[in-house]
Image 1 (cartoon, rainbow, N blue to C red):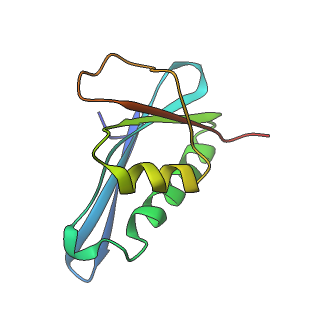
Image 2: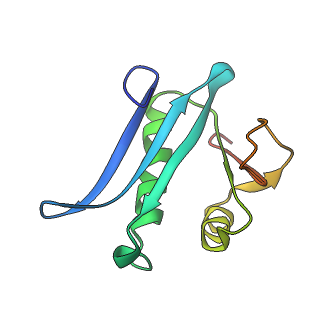
Length: 110
């Protein structure tokens, strides 16, 4: 669930219109899982996803999380580029999601 105390869902909006979202699930061992990162096609390329990810990281630190992880698909080239540019490192699979092809992790401490 993407609601306190086990998670959160952030929305980016301009006026009354929602531009995008990003979610965070709190997992065991001080790790958070980033999920449901999405930006409307008309709002892409404007830094909305980067802003959402930065805010998720800030909120994760407030929650005392030590690392964030996420997965994505091969065809989401721009997403993979974004995650890499934000310091997420691609590594071994952390789940068995049949739709995931790439797994990333970022340490929040250190």
